[in-house]
Length: 98
Image: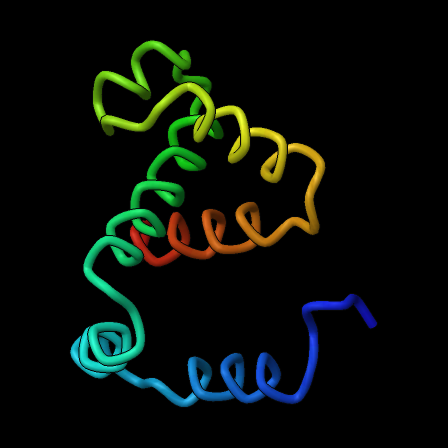
C-alpha cells in the first residue's frame, strides 16, 4: 500500500462514496475543505478536462487562471498517473450524454 493510503484515507473515500446528491456533496466538502482548497480541486479537474480536449496550456491558463506549473502537474498526473482523472472525466461525459 502506498504511504498516504491508510485507515483515515480509507474512511475519507468511504465517506465520499456515501454521498447521494450534489447538495450532500457540497455540504460535506464545505465542512471538510476550505473554500481555497475547493477552488483548487475544481480548477485541477477543469484543467484535466481541457487537457483531454487538447486545449493549449496558454488557453487553459487564460480560461481557468491556472498557472503553467499547475497545468503541467495536472498534465503529468493525467498522462502518467493512476487514471483517476480519466475515469472521472469519462463518467462525467457519460452523464452529460444522458
